[in-house]
Amino acid sequence: MSHASPDGNGRGPIPRWSRVVLKLSGEALAEPSGFGVAPSILHQVATEVRDVRSELGVDIAIVVGGGNFWRGLQGAGHGMDRAQADYMGMLATVMNGLALQDFLEQVGQPTRVMTAVEMPKIAEPYIRRRAIRHLEKGRVVVFAGGMGNPFFTTDTTAALRAAEIEAQAILKGTHSGVDGVYTADPKKDPTATRYEHISYMDVITQGLQVMDSTAITFCRDNDLPIVVFDLLVPGNTRSVLEGRAVGTLVG
Image 1 (cartoon, rainbow, N blue to C red):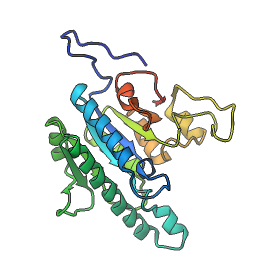
Image 2 (image 1 turned 180 degrees about the horizontal axis):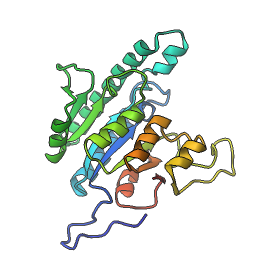
Image 3 (image 1 turned 135 degrees about the vertical axis):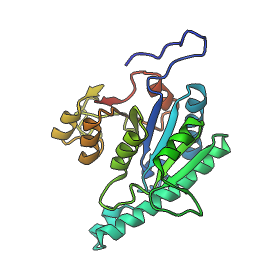
């Protein structure tokens, strides 16, 4: 990846992409226990999103998971109906979406939460054209409630929403020190090396845990690059958008 360059008018760097979807797992926002939300992390994420939105002029939509409150597969594993468990997971993503909105607006970034499952007292229903209009007006849009359908992950939601709003890339923010895609699990294999670039097909055939296979296939079919990077390293989100060699580019 090359560095972003000034635009010739002295207005600073031109971002690599002008509209992106930032995909966050619920666990990335969690307290050290893995549950709930950590205000310090929410503040860091909100501040960085605000800064790249205002200083680089990048349209940012966010898709957030809910694993810090509930995982549908976990419930299904304990004998719950899978669809019912997944609906509970959708509600967990709304909780994270509302928390993100609150912290983004605390730092001065106008934000809208849009949900695939209608709950008009707390968020707007997802309407594609309205979401695009919010982005054009400089607002951050948080997509919550998954796709509104069970059996699909929030990875797939991120891929679908990115295509719908004509985003140019998905930024997959990781946590726990994971800073990209490796040849093997770096925590178990000290010889594992990080890929700077890897193809969609290699991710699928090697079974690498980047996003689920439905999401990866969708991104391949719609030519949507994915950058996997450590969300919690300060400045990383901006570095990715400026085109620096951070994380792994899947495409």
